[in-house]
Length: 211
View 1 (cartoon, rainbow, N blue to C red):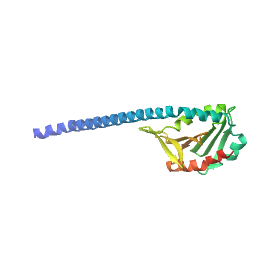
View 2: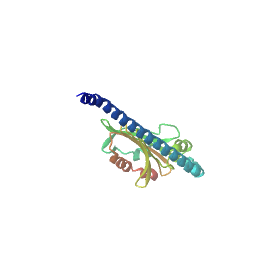
View 3: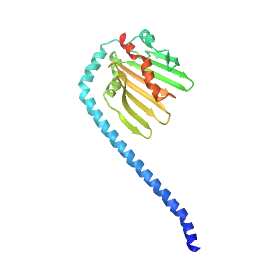
C-alpha cells in the first residue's frame, strides 16, 4: 500500500517534468529555426547587395534617361485609372499631388475589404529619384520567412513582384518596378491570396506605356 502511495505522489512530478521537457524541446527547436532563418536572410541580403552593386552603372544610366522624359499628366492618369478592382468600386483618388512628380493613388473598398494602389511615374528629375528604391528592389530576389510573415519574389505574366505578407493583420503588399519606369505599390485588406494576381491583371499596367 505504501508503494502505491509513493507512485501516486510521483505522478504529478513526472507529469510536470515531462511538460517542462517538451517546452524546452519546443523552445530549442524555435531558437534553432529562428537562427536558421536569420542566417538565410543575412545570406540573401549579401547576395542582393552584390547584385545591386553589379547593376549600379546600368541603373544610373536608366535613371538619367528617365529624367529626360515628361511625366504623365492628370488627364492621362484619369484615362487609365480603373473604376473597379475585384468588383470593389473606386472610392477615392489623388493624381499628381506633388510638384514635378507624376503619381496616382487610388482606393477601392466595400466595408473592410480594401485595395490601395499607388503608381509613381519615374519620368522627370524628381520622378526618377522617387522610384529609385523600387528600381533597386526589382534587381533583388526575396525569399524570407519569419513567424510574422514573409517576403518573396515571384512573377505574374512576366512581371516580377515583391510580395510581402503580414500574419498579424492578414495584409498583402505587392510592389514592382513596371516597364523600367513606374513604381507600383498595392496593399490589400481582407483579400484572398489567389485574388492578388487578378488585381495585377485588372490594373492593365501596359496602358500606362501607351501615352
